[in-house]
Length: 163
Image 1 (cartoon, rainbow, N blue to C red):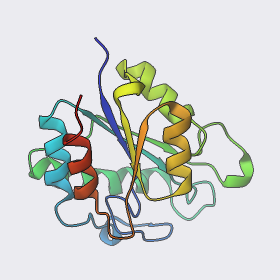
Image 2 (image 1 turned 90 degrees about the horizontal axis):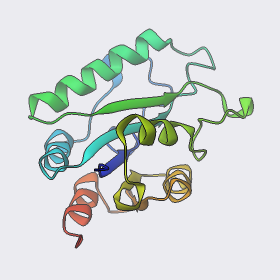
Image 3 (image 1 turned 180 degrees about the vertical axis):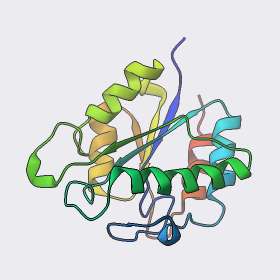
């Protein structure tokens, strides 16, 4: 049986956007995000992060630094009893025209294959046109955060939808 998934963006969706964040010390989840991710986990959704990280391709930070940032993030989520099922990231600059940078869907396609995801019953939560384009192209319902809509509001919308 295929799984339902909530794909999530990182910067300005679940964490403060620090342009080209190059240190775990600069990375901060928004309040309540770990608990909201746990709510999704408890409802049976996979939670998979899909994030563009062109700072690697631009030489602003390394993949090892990104790994340390994501270790901090996952530790904070796990401290509230939640978890991410996977993190997919694109390290390329926009001008490289890769197939993985959102709104292109290669990261999502890999996740769908890796986790047997039913995209028709899945969601993409993000803050940008690229996130919304990614979700729509992949076949998910999209929920945009920002302009008064928090990640918690997005989780409420997802969990309160009739199946």
